[in-house]
Image (cartoon, rainbow, N blue to C red; front, side, top):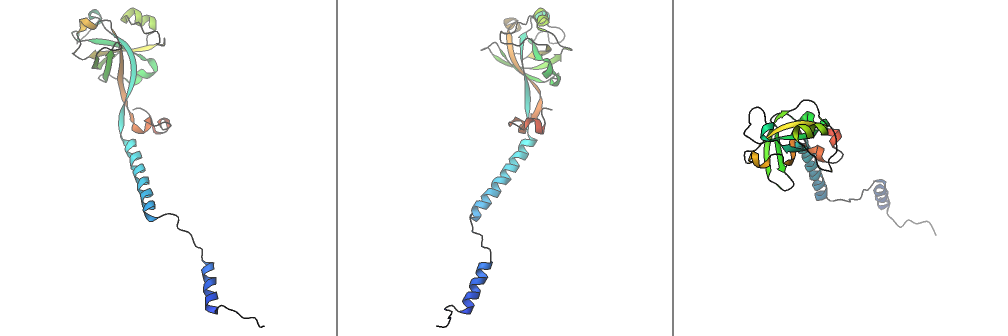
Length: 191
């Protein structure tokens, strides 16, 4: 029997043209792609916002409320306290910076501002002798920088003389992005 082709010649050519083209299957839909691009744009905008927004940076400190005879200079009638900051963290503290303090472990919370930063550092024995500061048992014995603060007028000086307090002193600001783990060193710290 002679060799007979059962397909038309034009059908065979169309088949060969079809197999020569690369066909990529469509795995995603257009709305999904648009949503992913929008998500990327939102993430970039959030990162730019976090780069520009600055938040306050605080230094924690312990201190004592000064008795009336230890107050010198202007503001003798107001309540003043001596705060003891770690020597390495005191460089950013300036006169006029806000202070938020709590007297004792459950006493009133007060606000105030830095009046002066004493030059140099002092040791625990000097803090005990000059300011009558007795840190708690869990406090590390280290050199401190003394910061004198004026507390709000809501405190009666005579009622709280010698009381211990814990405080947060504003020491500048930092980018919001530095609060995310791993970003602090790469984008810059406090300013």
